[in-house]
Length: 568
Image (cartoon, rainbow, N blue to C red):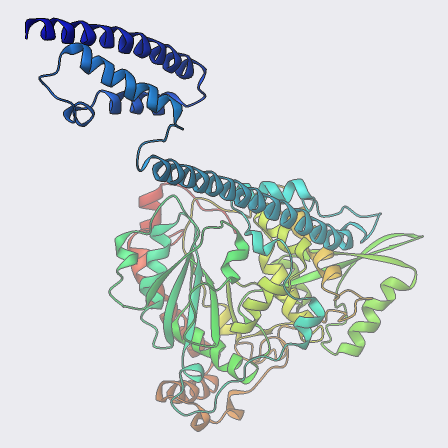
């Protein structure tokens, strides 16, 4: 038994030695295979993990000598080395999912960049095309006359400056309608009475800028007028809000129309819809009795295609010919007949060109003729405001935006152009003279260049709107102011009407019926009584303003301001 055991032990040792040599060779082969393998590090690490994992050793006898264990491991390692190594389970799915997510992120980023690039290209092309269209419109202005000073500020650089300064909207840098298209436009008709708001009330659109005290006084007065349906405040001050006393006015008639553009053109740009067709354009420092507003409103209702104003001005024609220059009023013969006006003004072009200039009130009254009115107090059809924004020649529109002046001349000439060159209508003389002006320390008409600027506006605007002597819709006609020396309080301006010819029963409200009757009664009174009545109405109108020292040259004003007033 002992011999057998020794023999068995010897055989076992020999076998172990043989197995050890085989294991060594297998180990060397495995190491060489590992060294030359292209499998990534993660796969190698996973194989090593599998080789030393408990499941790999659990199948072997734990009581077996260490040499058996190492032999088994070497055998397994040799076996593994001969097979193609596989990645861990789930690794390929994870890798593919990661690649898909990364691809989607890159594609989204590229799409966003492409979209931003396309937007920039579209904006650039829009600006280029817009500039080209504007330059085409501007050529008309620049080619008016080489002998006169052109209205500056219509080049692309100036447009960009106006945009940067928020003096014009991008959409308003070009016309949306031609002047010919505006001439073809049919105004919205007035509905038949009775009890219709368009024939009984009107909307006040009040322009203002940094004069809150004057604005509040004006609102307080005009909100009391029964004919006022709504008061829209054109608020262009983006840096400041209206005071609470205006935002929450107790009348309930006030609405703030906020504009992000600061320009005098904005007074004609309707942002909030108006409840009425009739628009009363007002400045914030002008007051008139409610009766004066009703007088102009009744006249406008009978001629809704015309502009009906209170303030009259005229144009003066300067004749340039080979024998020298001469100045004459646009209507020397004081005749409002179109044919005679055409002959008078046409004589100026027979031997040369003409240059138009602006005539102040003194010139207008001295000549007893006028050709335009000021929108600081004028009735207009709502459609004319929209047409101004859409169809006004851009050189005029841009000039007003750049220089903050002449929008009143532009609108008056614009409506005259659309009505065959006829001048605006004027309300009764007593209503014109009923104006109450609120005091303001800042005056726009006091500059030394004010007159020359308005001269330029009159001449060039008339040319662009076709109301000069050779214009397509001209010439601009003039009309007499006073027709009857014995009755100067009524029948003022072009196409005078007699209150006796107006049927009070045709009015759409009881207020207007009573007003027409009161005008008929006032008309037959003596001039002295008429003046008394007018003085009483003006006193009532200025009562609140006078009390706080806002009526110039009154005791209250002297006490508050301690300075003399200057003529405006």
